[in-house]
Length: 258
Image 1 (cartoon, rainbow, N blue to C red):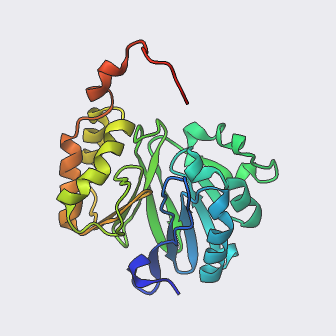
Image 2 (tube, helix red, strand yellow):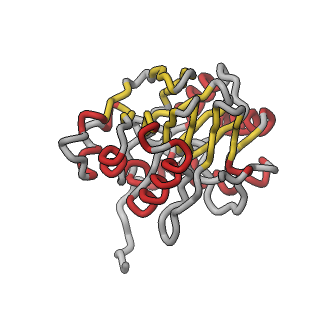
Image 3 (cartoon, rainbow, N blue to C red):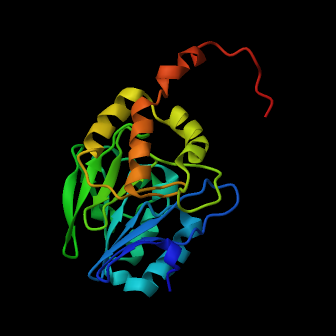
């Protein structure tokens, strides 16, 4: 039974679920999202080996592992793809990855028997069918990976934003006070997004969508149009990356002491 707070959306035939957080210790906190439409499922950014068996069991209990149709990989980081071989070996699902990372992901130990089930999505994105719903795979390059994708679900109006919108250190699932929430997002975005120019281009695209919820891969979920719009406005004005870090390019003066 999925706790109500982890059901982002549920109309009976279509569900958007935040799966249980099985990550502990020194690993960065990471959300794993799950979309189900008419019994078919897609898992988003399923993470590494320590969480794999727990997530596989949870999905098996919900829809049966043979009904997992897609494994979505927004980019190449280990908190997203490290356990991809296990997912491909134990399910019949197709993995969707930015085409830029297709030849890098096999370094995580993908068996030759399943490697052809990793499909490269072109830079401009695409549309896929899950159950009776069309999901939009959107370009989100340089946020933060140079090859990066997001998922928009037009039924639930959820945008799965990957690392964009990430927050670290908060103790809540849903954002209640956006102004207070900024302090948990600010450091990540200023350091991991390379330039404000890409943020402005992305915001322009995102404003064309009807978004009720932004669900990032790290931290709290932004639910409700007011919070979503506040987030878009914040990104549109944010200075980040090279915009504010030019001074870091200088020769070091201190020794590393470990």
